[in-house]
Length: 560
Image (cartoon, rainbow, N blue to C red; front, side):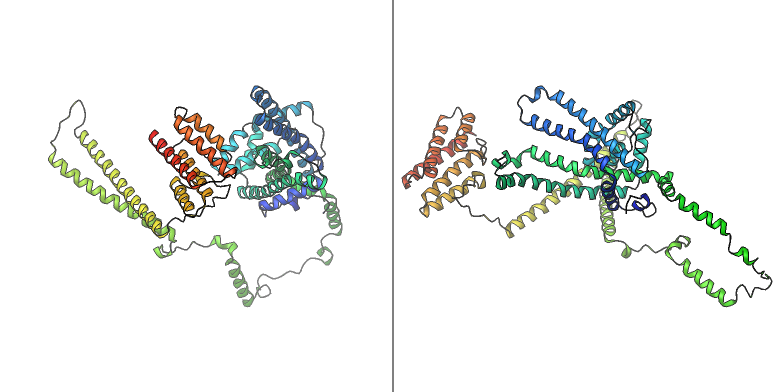
């Protein structure tokens, strides 16, 4: 296939799904999309580079807030520049589909397109996030803003006409649009995963094969950097977005063709010479029966030559068989089937039973309240009109209050019953499946004080003392001290903090508690010498450490 044929790429009668549309977009870019891609990347590369620089500079530069506004204004100008060249990209592809020659734009056309894109695409930064939160209108909103890009160009004269046409194309074939977006989203996720793997492995390959050291090969936490994720997402955008916009160019082109027949005119223009030649040959040859003379006359009075009885019966059977096909089912009357409860779906039956049960309960409660009201009215005195108010107004208010009170009691009773059932189920689950306490390896450096409660650390320390593991018992006691301080809001346990960091944090929070600070400092120094300094530890030293731990627990609990 040497060139893209619109009729081959998109069939209006078949209404292809979004997968076929995405495939045709890739085909169009591969065969005829080189000039359009050149225009696309002229506008998109500067914006992506500016966005990466702005992101990294505002994330790390301590003086970024002083020039954040002019930098954001420059990034907005780059965004308008990108949208301008993306319009040029869509205009190139539309010219390929229409078999037209591209012509340079005038300065007025460049300015008009830039003004329209700046005014319309700026709203997408607000509408698209809101539509993604609501989720349902996201496909239509995204298609609308893509249509504003690919349908703009020097031929557009009015802003209202562009908006109306973009809205009409966004509402056309919504199933096709959402399926195409689903396919493109999955494709984008695959490309993003490949980009992440490439950015992770490229520095390692450079270091292993060429001996080139980079900041990424020297640092192991670059994956936690937001700039790394922005770079991966930007490269994915540069790879996937041209295919998305090409798909919307095809979608808009054939959407307009439904009204204008533009694709048919394109195909007729290509094969006009062949059609004209065939018509001329047929006209020169003439009808085949002109030489043979007029057809023989058949007498109408004698119907036997036309059709006999056997032919008539066979014709009737053939007509009946054809009429029984699904294509002619619209001619038949709709059959009425008795609506029996057994024939209805189980979900319909369940919902109906639930609604009927609640209605019966409500009617019962309403009858009780009505009987209560009648009993009260027999005992309450009658009142006359006062201050131009109709008699019985206070009775209506009392009756309304009684109904509201009854409804509140009913809702409260149902809530109480539901809570009782939930608590009972939780207790039964706890009895059947008691929590399993995983064993803790005190020699593991990755454990922290928040892995177990304080009493569990103390029991673990007692267990280690019984086994004569003094170093592990000392560590369990120190983790119990940290757990007690964290439970009472004196410390925040974190894996990256050192013991000196904990002491500095406790000093800031308990500046007026010298005894607590002295005891914690003593425990910290003893633990550092024993655990990290590999000093010998004795049972008396562990006993003194335990007494300090108990005193710290008493001081912390008494200060609350």
